[in-house]
Length: 286
Image (tube, rainbow, N blue to C red; front, top):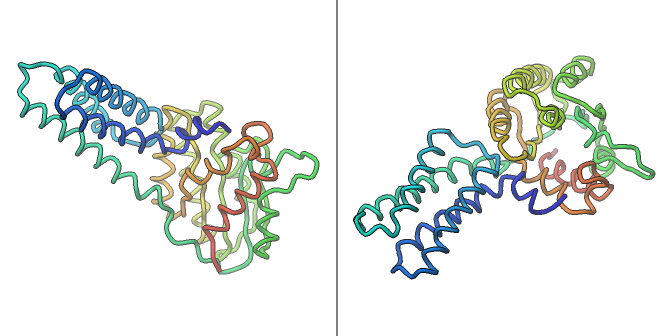
């Protein structure tokens, strides 16, 4: 998939956006030259657009306050009646808010220690990304993982899988308390336009059932299209609630980035399957 698209879907645009905002705000405090002033404004505006389009959860209050401060900053940068001290205060507030937002999101960029496995049994409940689409010579990431790590991987992924269908699948699978369950699900719900409230309720049910069945559950955070940060927020909230290990979406985004990683822009080629197996392998240990 296109690198630029994945820059937003992965959440990296959140960080590049705030970097631009901070840089542009700092530039505006330097002695005014017309070119520098317009460049500073452009940096701030492009940075704000990146933050909004990144689909990274951010509180409404923080975002509204940031927008108001940026508007004030842009309209007073050349206003001689607006004291330089006041301009400096506005600029400092913008920088501090930006740093706070970055620090608040950082824990979700790093995945932490790998999950320690107690058995060789791994169960996968997922959609067509993990089920494969059946092209000639296809080898799914679950098969690659089983071969590379000598694991017994049971792949219950189905094309078109949703959170609701995964709840039904989970109830039929005989998973031991010490086995490992991997969930790669929710993308079809979002693509179908599921209401945020329904997504939350269904995911809550799925993770509650999963946590009740086994102690080791891994979920892949989903790359998100613009204006879907609420779904990422729900994934993070519910995984924390049920002690589910969440693999940051930058990993999933890396898997599907590049023309050779997918066969149709979304479903994995064998190269993509190997990349996904590598991601999962990085997050488990015996």
